[in-house]
Length: 185
Ligand SMILES: Cc1cc2nc3c(=O)[nH]c(=O)nc-3n(C[C@H](O)[C@H](O)[C@H](O)COP(=O)(O)O)c2cc1C
Image (cartoon, rainbow, N blue to C red; front, side, top):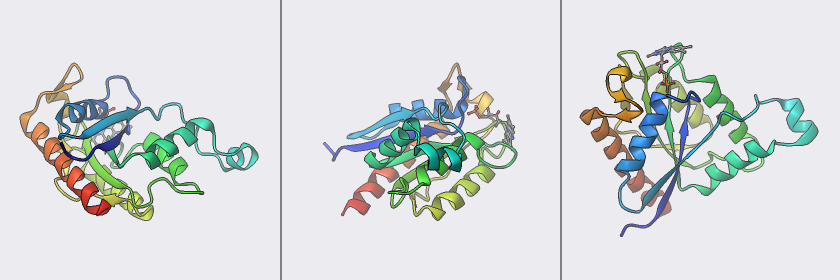
């Protein structure tokens, strides 16, 4: 059995029928031996507010997210694409995670994938997300890039059915596991 690897899954979409949350469910079923993927919920985070932070500190729900990111061996983000970028909900979660002390993405292995209704399947969104995570010194897996375009034709009742997409996710998870091991060494 391989060394255990704990992965925290974050969906950038908070809607119940989210295609991106469906990608994370698919990933849970495709994880290589030793890897477990827990999916967290970012829908209860308040908007980042510096006044709130300075008056009463980082809210518990944000501290919980930060602690879960720090404790995980890796983070797996499934990002939607809104108007050519990633969602406000995801940016908000990243902003809370980035606050000192111990910004949560520092040196954190991260895998990225995404599903959208458009043909390009989050190409633009993932580019922006990589820029932001680079700011935070996250260590992204570069390949494969998993773009699930026309997701409405590939996900039925919350289940990803598209074999090529499933294959890309499987390879991403294998590469993420190898990346975690490499950074551990
Ligand atoms: C405000 C908004 C902007 C969108 N912009 C894009 C876009 O730029 N590219 C794209 O492929 N899909 C776009 N879409 C469609 C989303 O890909 C689609 O709603 C998708 O289901 C969102 O991901 P989810 O299923 O995980 O919620 C947009 C949707 C919304 C609500």
